[in-house]
Each structure stands twice: as C-alpha cells, then as structure tokens.
Image (cartoon, rainbow, N blue to C red; front, side, top):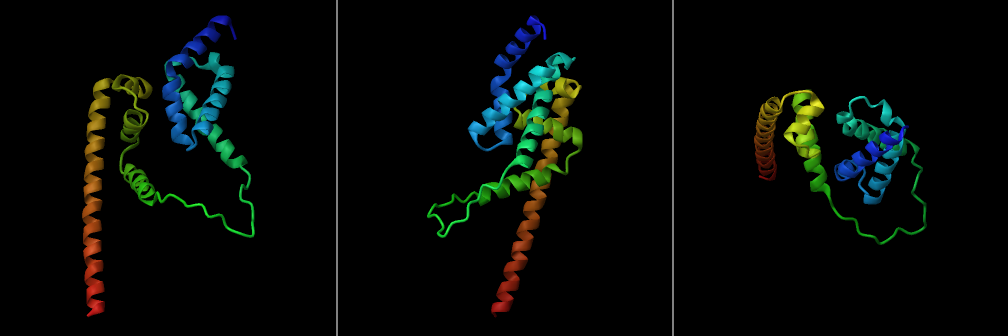
Length: 182
C-alpha cells in the first residue's frame, strides 16, 4: 500500500470513527467488545483499502466486515457457563419490555419493501443524512425523502393495526374469563 493510501485510510478513520463505533455498538452489547470489533474490522479493511474502488462505499464495506467478524466470533464462542453447587444471588434486570418492543419493531419492519427498509435503517438506525443515504443507495435525495415518508407512514399504519388487533384480542380474552368465572 502506497504512502498516500495510508494517509487516505487514516483520514477516513479519523473522520468516520464515531459513526463506525455506533454501528459496532449496535452489533455487540458490550462497549469494549464494540471497540474490539471496530478495530478488527479496520485492520481487515486496511489490507483491502486499495481494492475499494468507490471510497464513498467504505462505510458499507466496513459495516459488512463488522457483521462478518461478529458472526465469526459468535460461531467461535465457547461455553462460558460453569456448573456449581450453589446458584449466585445476582439479580437480573428485567428487560422483557425492551426486548418485546424491539421484537415488534423488527417484525413490523418486514412489511416494508427492501428499498424502504434500507432507507429507514440508514436514516434512523445509522443516523446518516439524506445525502449520505442517497449516495449509499444510489438514488436522489428526493427519492430518499419520499421513500422514507411512505415507509414511516406504512410502519405507523401497521403499528396501529396491530394495536387494534391486540385490544380486540384482550377484550375477547377478558369476556371469556368472565364467562368462565360466572
């Protein structure tokens, strides 16, 4: 790798490190593991930097490297449970509601077309600007805006529909319990 390419890579990392670290934090829950994941991805990308013809797509390339690396780590993990005679007295924080909200969000995202889903993920989860999203997806900024508007409207509609279904189901359940109790 030529000296100019090294400087170009260093400049890229300096300017994009915060956004890349946010992406890594979304992939692994522990902040230290996220830093390790990003560093590993950067090392792997450095070796391939001159092969990335369009440097505007470097973020997407790095995210793919992070996803692949995380998958490798997950497959290589070892059993970390140790059998003991007594259970520890540690309390566990109940994050059931948070997991349910995330599961619901992931489920309703399935109703979107792939292009809409990509726009929502890049704009809201990756916190990319309209212009960055347009460049990453190869579309105009106006198309990104209109696609995002339609996608969010569809998500709202789906969420409201599920809320109505849930209300009807809980009312029927309540009536059934009252009938059985009578």
